[in-house]
Length: 279
Image (tube, rainbow, N blue to C red):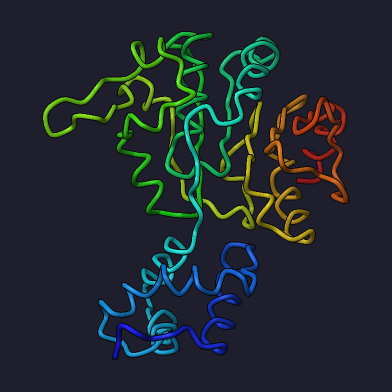
C-alpha cells in the first residue's frame, strides 16, 4: 500500500546530497524518519509509489519549482519574537546608538519573519517609525518568506513580546482573525524580504551596519560555516556588527572579526577597507 512507503537507503542518500548542495546542510542518518514524514504527503499526492520516483520527478522538473518545494519542506523554521532577548538589549543599548544615519540591517536567516519584525519594532521605537532605516530579511525558503510577507501571527507566540510594542506596532485580530495579530504596515514597509542562499555571493544585497546570523550555523559543518562567513563578512560596513546565536561560536573559523562578547562580533574598519579593495 502507498501509505506504508519507506525511504530507502538509496533515496535518502540522493535527497541528502541534493539538500546539501542547495542548502549547505548535511542531514544525518538520525533525520531519516523526519525527512520521510515531511515528504510522504507530497509523494502520495503525486500518485507516486516510492521516494526514488519522487526524486526522479524533482530532478525532471525543468522549472525547478519542485526542487524549491523540496527545500521548503526540509527547511527548519523554529523561531519566535524577541528570541534570545539579551541580543535585543544589546541592540537597544549599544548597537543602535553606534549606528550611522540611515542604518541597514540584514537578517540572513529570517525564516517566517519573527526576527526581522522584532528588530524593526525596536528600531521604530528608538529611531522613529518614519525614520530612515532598512532591514533586509532573507531566507532560503520561499514558503516561510511568503508567511513573513503576510505579517500575521498567532497570539500564543508572543511570550517575550513587549506589551507596549503590541499596542504601538500591531493590530489584534477580531472575528475570523481572533487570536491573531498583524504587524502594522508601517513596520512591514521597512522590511524587504528576499530569497537568498547563504552559499551564494551576497554582493547584490549591498553593505550592512549589522548582520544577524542567528541559529543557522549550528546546522553547518566546519567547511560550510567558513564558506558562509566568507560570503557575509565582505557585506559588513566599516565597524559593522555580526550577531550569531547564543549556542553558536566561530571557533575554528578564520575571520577578521573581533569578538565583543559571546555571540557578538565586530569588524575593524581598516579590515573592511581592505576587503572592499579585493571584493
